[in-house]
Length: 98
Image (cartoon, rainbow, N blue to C red; front, side, top):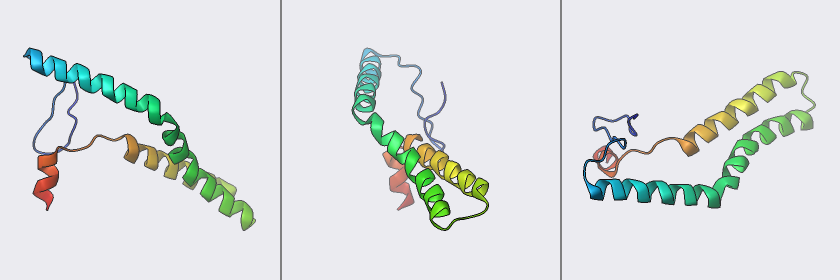
């Protein structure tokens, strides 16, 4: 399984050797799925906002080259979704940055 954080410590979630580890992994996956069911609509809003802003500005200013603005909006949407769904680093890694 892939590492969840790209820091010097790797967090692997594929193999749990003890019952407590398997239970924790199952509970994490269950709660993560429940969270996604509750907030799925936020992902759509985050994806639509940069696209709507770029294209809206283009239409308001009557821009001649809308292809650039569509591309900028799609790039902004992809970037926002990657930031929202990307893996988080462990607390120890964040504490080391202080």
